[in-house]
Image (cartoon, rainbow, N blue to C red):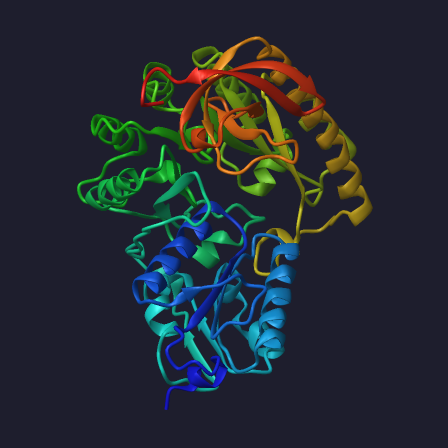
Length: 455
């Protein structure tokens, strides 16, 4: 018997309804888009997660304790919304905390680990169920990336293209290598095939993403690297703008900077994790650079790409971080030509080396330090926006409008700008001159549709 019929309306022809919710990184978002593509191809109806559904898919995150708590909250919400629905939990929290999920579920649950995400849609659509189905396995033994194809990003102007999964770094604070396994790259032909799908669908900006994207290609046969992948992508000649997701500082090479400086299709935008500006803390984190080396890399980026946005990730309150160590971080970031900071409090994650370290800091100390970092972020963003006043940029206009009826989009160097434009400009490149700042809100005037079709 098809148990899903129990949850449907009286109309026997109504397709099964599936609701998907996603926490965490761009990689998770790409994978959820692949699930949506498969469900749509099978004639299931996608419905918001807040609505009744026959199947609930929760793509979880475990990077922080807060993300794990949000994952648990979403599982409980789905159980309350329709206890008879098929509940499928996947993602990093499902991979590392399956027993925690079992302890809170009052309905049958299907747990799909990160190494089996390519099977998720087929598993979710099965007609029969048992009290528990688990497809986790030893993620550390996976040697190939899950083959997932995306046909559509719902409600998005830009598309994320997952080129890599996993991480070999084992930073002491990070659960990701245990949740995602070792670094695995998408073969070149599959990268180019997914790229072609996005181009055919009309996406104008594609974000190349991975858990450790800069490690791309080292595991392939023959081995290749991230810069060579970019060269092959650019050689396709698509009228698309490419944006890079986070790259480790030691993977930002002169060859990469030269390619970015000479390729208009590569957005001048880098996101670089620092985590700490103190050498003792960096060593305790198992980060493979010094504060001095990080400073040299960021300076090289700003020299090669003078108009670039350079965003930095930083953790506050790592075990053993005293006031002097934190001030070293503040001093380094204040001096460097970075344009924004993404500041987070250290989150103690069970199963990581750092969770067992002595001198764990109180919550209020971490919060106070994050607040100081966010003040610095405000100053950096304000200064960067001010440097771009009265300059014209190529903006990819997004669909929808702000409350004031303006379109919104991002410049090539990642400044969000609001501007007056006809609705038909959505998903088009337009030339916009930045004319006014209202705190961190940036306004501009459109000069017209961009003269070229490309970025």
